[in-house]
Length: 246
Ligand code: IPE
Ligand code: IPE
Ligand code: MG
Image (tube, rainbow, N blue to C red; front, top):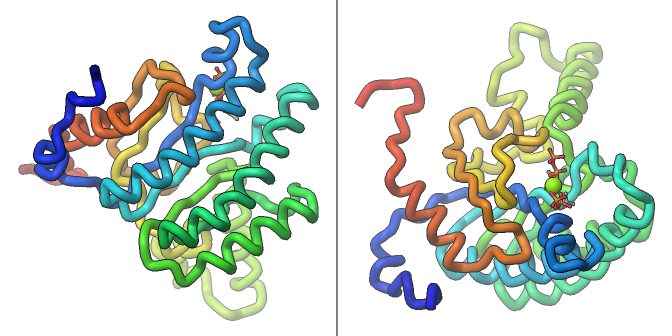
């Protein structure tokens, strides 16, 4: 029934945010509510990500970023972490084909040094094979933490100062942005969090300075095109002032 809620004409009348970022939350609770193990939620959730890449791209979103694994998610059981990483490996391989079909450029952000060689190889192949695609940019955050990213960026800038390449006075906000994993990408316009929690959980701390936040109770495995359009609809009603007065 909900499928017919948004007509093509209505969707065409909406302003589509250039960059949408998603904290895909609620996989575990969704599965547990069905009497299934938490990992079942990750399996279904990872299929939803695949669908959303096409949906987001067809809606005209230019940058679509998803939070897949945080620097804090290592605290989970070895079993859950291992299922998550086998899903990343499986889906990143599939994405190599899908990104070619859909002209999508893929970028992985986060600290890749903790990921194993096989996964790093898959990531390299995906990024390289898709780097000249001119459609949507799909950013996946794996072993990503906003504080960790800022710390790594500060270290890079500090070594440039130490080597005499730049002086401390030359450090600007743009320079800091460029040294983050997201260097060269625009900041998110809309940040969606599914699963009912209303917090940022260490995601894109620097980049979300002026993002519009949208929270929904729907758990990630149930997220679909209608849910995304609902978020975009709410975004259309926001008055973005960026500290100014309208
Ligand atoms: C999000 O769902 C996926 C990851 C964090 C990897 P959760 O696994 O956090 O699901 P809940 O929040 O426990 O339901
Ligand atoms: C945020 O979800 C991380 C991802 C979606 C990958 P969490 O489930 O880890 O966040 P908390 O623990 O509820 O803050
Ligand atoms: Mg969670």
